[in-house]
Every structure is written in C-alpha cells, then in structure tokens.
Figure 1 (spheres, rainbow, N blue to C red):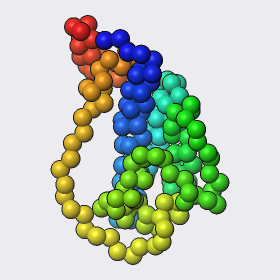
Figure 2: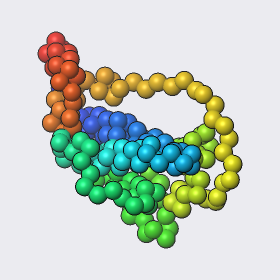
Figure 3: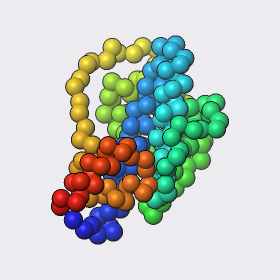
Length: 190
C-alpha cells in the first residue's frame, strides 16, 4: 500500500503520540505515585523512562532518528515536574502552530488531546497522583488520595494498526529484529 506523504506523516505522528508521548505521560504519573509512596528507586526509574520517551517523541515528531538513544541520558534532571512541563511544550510536530508559555503562566499550557490533560479533565483516578503537590500541573495541595479502582484496559499497538509505515518508522526508531522480520514479511505479502 502506497501512502501519500500527508497520510504517512499523520500515521508517524500517531505512533509518536501513542507509543512515546502518551506512555511517557503514564510513566510520569507512576513516578509521582512512587514518590508519594516513598519508593525512591521506582520514582527515579519511572522519571527516567518518562523523560526518555518524551525525548523520543520530540525526535519522531520532527523526523529525527532516535536510534541509539536507548537509556543513555547524561544528566539526571533535578526536578521531574519542571522538566516534564518544559519538555512537553516541544512534544508536537513542528509544523503545528504552538505558543511557548512562560513559566509564570504555566497553567495556561495544555497539549490538545494530551494524555495528562485528559487525566486532569476527566478526573481520572491517576489525576490525584499527578496534581498532588505539583507546581506545574496541580491546582492546589491534596492531602488524601482515593484508593484506585482496578480496571482492565488494552491498547492496539500503533504499528499493527498502520503496518504501512513500518519502512519509514524503521529508519527513525529502534525496532527489535523479530518485529522487523514480521513487518517485512507482512509488507512483502501485500
């Protein structure tokens, strides 16, 4: 199947959003949950995972390769909340119009359709962990956290939904050999 450049861009942006930015938003919430529970190591690992995925999303949105980035961040960021807020301002396709928000007006910044924004707007169970003592995403301090309900969820992998972007995506992100073999075989059969 031959895709128009516009379709290919839309599918690559969908991959960047769903596979990197949205998952990074979830890692960020997990980091805050771990911090609140006084679990230092999971807090640090989840923070690192969130930042790595945000960086990969930025690269993919701008069609820059993230191959070789892996888990190599030279410097740990001191304040995860502040770092995430600043990084997310650049986590979009550069040809979209966007205004960079001064830190003093941080509450005016929102990514349209962003996962964190949905968590807050829909008062998701994770919202309390996200906004608890959070200068960048919180409105006020919360001393209690509702016990989360256990929910089942599933997400279709974006590459399975759009196998036609495999060749372009393979140039931009690291894909395991098994997955490469699978999608090359699928695309050769079409």
